[in-house]
Amino acid sequence: MDHFLYQKGVLHAEDVPIPEIAAEVGTPFYVYSTATLTRHYTLFDEALSGLDHLVCYAMKANSNQAVLALMARLGAGVDVVSGGEYRRAIAAGFPGERIVFSGVGKTVEEMETALEGGVRQFNVESEPELRRLSDVASRLGKTAPITVRVNPDVDARTHEKISTGKSENKFGIPISRAREVYAEAAGLPGLEVVGIDVHIGSQLTELEPFELAYAKVADLTRALRAEGHGIRRLDLGGGLGIPYERSNAAPPLPTEYGEVIKRTVGDLGCEIEIEPGRLIAGNAGILVSEVIYVKSGEGRDFLILDAAMNDLIRPAMYGAWHDIVPVNEATPGAELQPFDIVGPVCETGDTFTRNRPMPELAAGDLVAFRSAGAYGAVMASEYNTRPMIPEVLVNQHQFAVIRARPTFDEIINRDTIPHWLEDPA
Ligand code: LLP
Image (cartoon, rainbow, N blue to C red; front, side):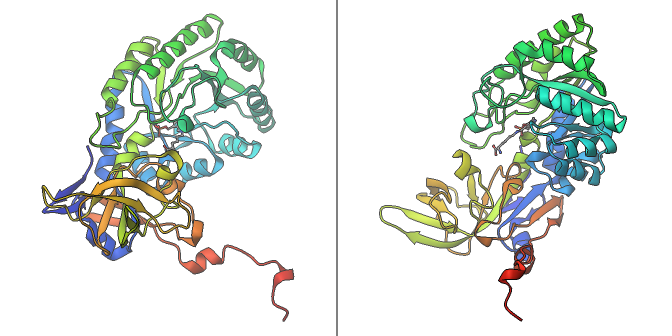
């Protein structure tokens, strides 16, 4: 469920008509709903009720400071994967003890930043990282709380580019070698083993892979405890999928996911962390764009939009589906016609979808890409010198620009011409 509904034939974000935002900020833009973000966080929080737990929002899905500030106020923790994301978390008001630091390639500088600023735990992904973190923490006179990310060799049955829990993926330590790695960690200075971490992939639409992975983590917890390790925290990662295509069956709900967690690891007396990103932000955002041209091609017609692959890369990168709807609701029963929906960028990859049945649309009409709140704005670029598009946050009847569109001068002036290319005075 989200809060982007038609009211009197016009798409709204909560109580704000989309055309009103378009008139003020110009198209294209992203708009997010406070009510939906709040609802999705709360669903996860309630799904884990009865367990000692922390929902650590994976900010890679949407790291706008306003979204983070909302999560911080709701009491969430946060999962970060770079020094930049760590700084965003601190700037948005997350205390260090609610920041989990994940990622396969943490640098010395990133480790120092988090150790100095405070961190809940590092999720360590390899033995070289373990040794480096031990060195850095010892040098700073700190103790780094750690989990080791184990790779359970489970097929998440999702898109290959976002599957992470198979043995051939670059992530984590093979679960078969976990005991020796924990033994090494226990002997290294500057580290305190606090738990185990696992994350098997993103956009999972079935619960079985989670169940298999978490059962393996439960077995490992018992085995490590028997060897004297103080396993008191389990980070179970993110990955629960969202309904991108409304005509398809909906993926499992957070409550059902919570049941899996309780069934597999609920009796271990561990503190449970989860790192959902997409399910919190995905259906809390839409991308609004204007039709520039309706173009008749040979055997096919094109809707050319002012949004492009640089603004929303998921279709070009993963072949991802986003529902695309007119902002002015089509009359019920209106005839639909197939369109290739494309952006203005100069490559064929800049195609959002092919042969999509759409109602009649004309230049100047607005359309909305649904489910664009996660991995939309954060993956945008300025390819073709197209400015990063604004982000807007709605809260009931009010809205605010939470990231403004840069000017062309700002973009151009980020570059510098070296002195040997400057015009002779
Ligand atoms: N924790 C870790 C360690 C992760 O690597 C990820 C996502 C998450 C949590 C959050 O997963 P979520 O709940 O959002 O599924 N750009 C891709 C998705 C990449 C996901 C990467 N890792 C897309 O647009 O589909």
